[in-house]
Amino acid sequence: METATLPAPKGRPREFCTDAALAAALRVFWSKGYEGASLAELTEAMGITKPSLYAAFGNKEALFHKALDLYEAEKMAYTREALQQPTARAVAEYYMRGALDAQMSSCEPKGCLGVISSVACGAEAEAIKADVVARRASSQRMLVERFEQAQRDGDLPAHVDPAGLTTYLIALLQGMAVQAGSGATRAALEQLIDTSMAVWPSK
Image 1 (tube, one colour):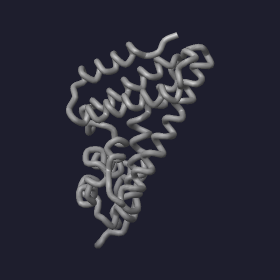
Image 2: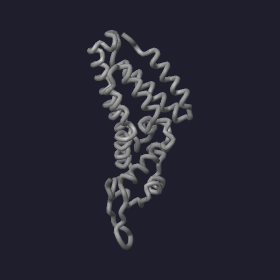
Image 3: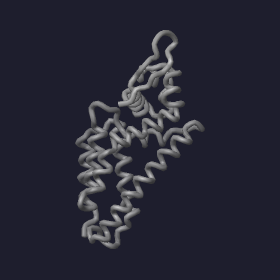
């Protein structure tokens, strides 16, 4: 756990846990999106002053990138575990059920931080959207490679396009995130997963 020691207006330097502050910032970004999160809301949630935020994390954009790193490391761990599943079908199902568990968590905001932030608009958000798009592209490449391997292993029919299958799965995941953010029930999203698995290409 990291701590930051920053100058205080009077007396001893102020110390705070940067990990805890970053986790608090992540929750604000997650619930409000990049543009919707004000510096006042961020500093209040983090329990620090604006000068302390700038000294420890840089500006708001830099803080968001660090929060996105934390989001991927902690909230998206299931995506890495999904790739280790023995079949393409199991990969997809693990991915979708992991996303559902994350989206239905009672202790976190609903929806996907990447989706929330990628729909931001305005000049300030261009770098944010570019980062989200780049991270998504990296995740998609790993899925395509996993489905290509499944095809070589005879686990996927030869006529199935791994890239197209990946796009289909990502679209389902993004749709789940939007619906979760709009108040969809777990039962409704589980039905979507079950339907998707029912039409998954088989050998």
